[in-house]
Image 1 (cartoon, rainbow, N blue to C red):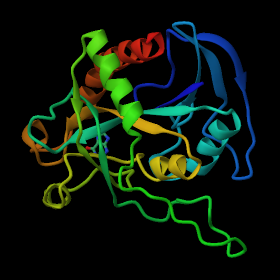
Image 2: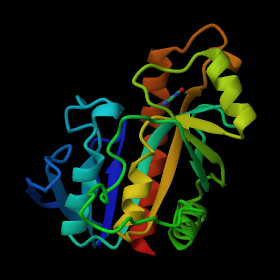
Image 3: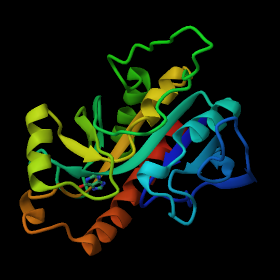
Image 4: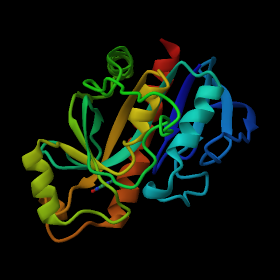
Length: 245
Ligand code: HPA
């Protein structure tokens, strides 16, 4: 069963035929909300709203461990993350959909591993390729089948939030090699890898990053809402095609 973790702009899936909602407890506390089980184009899917169904949980307070453990308990075999980002690279303008292939993690203070006990042998995961290659290909193929343009590959910078970045921080991220910036990609991707669940993302550019292009004088929150509302319609179409394939 496929899991979809929806971020800002995607707190529910209209085309999901709802089967049941399940409140789950995990050894790591409570997930962001109930797991919503349903069918998308007749395939079983479970949906979880990363920031809660009322969009009340900020990026640094999301219980990533509980979310990932809950999906693991539900025996999902793949996770697609949908998350909005700021575009750093000049061609990544608002509304662009991207399937990133790399991550740089700038977050701090988040519970970023399930292997945190001094009573078990130390566990290291290979994270050279943080996203699952086959799942990325599946998303890109679904995008092509849906007639939607998805950019193949970009470096995602995960920042702590919840504040947006300064213009100088964006310049630094660019020098580091980042193409786009978001606040929730880590530790989500690493926890999925620890659990052995294939994980990939669809990033939606909500705004130019701080100091860039139309964000040169500041970031306009009203236009973010407009951009996300339109772009999430395209993301939903891609998700429908993933399930149809
Ligand atoms: N920075 C970080 N996260 C984001 C942004 C941004 O500009 N836009 C949407 N999520």
